[in-house]
Image 1 (cartoon, rainbow, N blue to C red):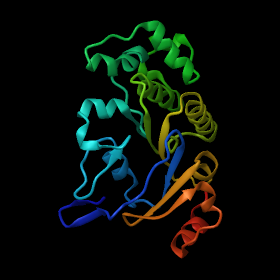
Image 2: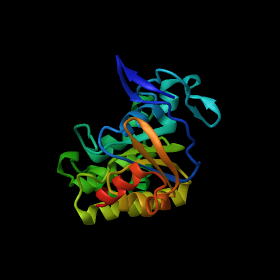
Image 3: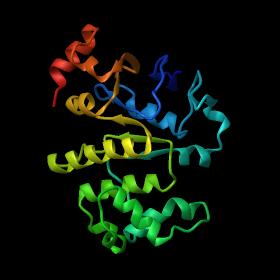
Image 4: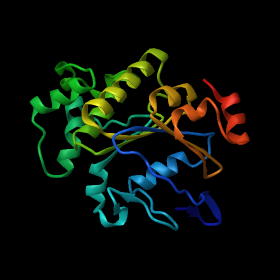
Length: 230
């Protein structure tokens, strides 16, 4: 699978598989194409050539709404709409013409370690870590099979980052959600990910169990790892 914009090749002949019900981390320098890959998995953009399959079905065979419910995405800046935390949690179902009972909304908050009192909080008043938890809870409202996580701890302090890491592991274990997590922290990629893809210059350079970061097979990845631990 490849993706280009004009004459610029963003992703070049990516071939691989993401294990179901596991956490796969995407590592690599800025500009490697990691975020572009997530957008392709969510149907926000389409490959220039090649195909993407989810559950053995070509991604093009899914209706866009069905696909984005099945493959939820959480972003680094955890965007919130104006209003309360409840308004944000209810948004996915509201867009589908449905209502989210407050009791059910409270259970989603409980899943991410926030109590029911947060439902009436103004989303603008949340800390960075709380916003990210609400963002993750909102993706869970659609009960996705897949979670796409784009550097969701990059803007957080170490304590908040650790809370989000523990949350992601808990969700993966409890619900068996397949996760693809872009992270620039190689230690995070190694310890949280069951598997890791290392991308460089739009190519998949190495892939396998996350222990590959301890003993890379290629010189390029070895240099990256030696200079990139954080």
